[in-house]
Figure (tube, rainbow, N blue to C red):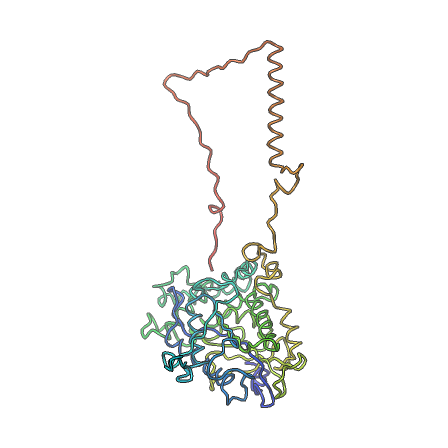
Length: 485
């Protein structure tokens, strides 16, 4: 990591004179099974990772004794009006969010009990287990998204998908595809039971890395494990990092980072509610894939702070946006008195690996005036499903259809004649023309005394009439193929 980043990261995240107004936490899931075998599942190790991370954030934002406790937040029993928790429709991400919350608000024992009208006291099961709902993320996502090798296809944004696919036509990609051929082929004995020789290339850098990475964590015996020297594992990781960051962000094509843009919009709108006196929401937690981290890192210029921000984040990593004032006042502050701090923990947040403060948007400080923060975020933000998002994505169907009323077909919209469409007018015109022709024909026959007779064409004996069937035109699906990444 760069010296500048080290110095900034060592700055205390908060001081006793500050008042934390609210926070937005975006977290990756915990350890899971490989994407090579669907569906992926959260492992016991992964559950432990996100639980410990949730516990650390409890010690920071929830615990009554914490100097960085969010002002006025409930400490023992979760108040659902103060929390908003979301995750895509996915068993790994939804499961991680649920377990994280048990670290944030653990079973409360007798505190989580209720006295009935008849005098009976009922304690919630599992030592006062707290039921905190995890809602479906507003951003477009598909079921079992963690089972896919690359998650851009779930963005619902055609332009973003096309931009990501353009990476496979870049000079960097072709150079690495060629220069790493031998490297991946040499490792074929390790993964040939799952990946063919044709798939053992840089094109599948993440899938190959993920398969081996998961194996090194969970498999005591790996085929040809002698090929997996530490330097080889590091190269696999480095290539996967390059591959995935190339798909997630490109400075000349910002729409490629649409996931980060949608996240930026949601962060701003959510934190605004923490300032408002009319809202009780104080903490927003969202779980999502590593690709969203990479997209946001690129858009917010964090990749210039350290090369660590161009790498795939570890399991249970989290980034946090902390809203605070530089006073101990509990009254609702004016916007010009509010600041924002960006924190990041690569891997499970804990006392040994705490979330640290970093500068974003090219700033030299880790504290942002709220107004400056909003201005910078709005430069990269796109509200999912908004007209701006639909225009940027080139999407006119589904949730975007309301912004693009169905255009009348050419037969209706190009011209209307007395309330009559072109199609109807054309039919009537044709019938009128046919009537004129038949009338002229009758007149000619009547005047000239001519008579039409039906003449049957004689065919050679023993033969029958032959009909030639015209060749079937190939459909669009016959001529086009879709490349799955």
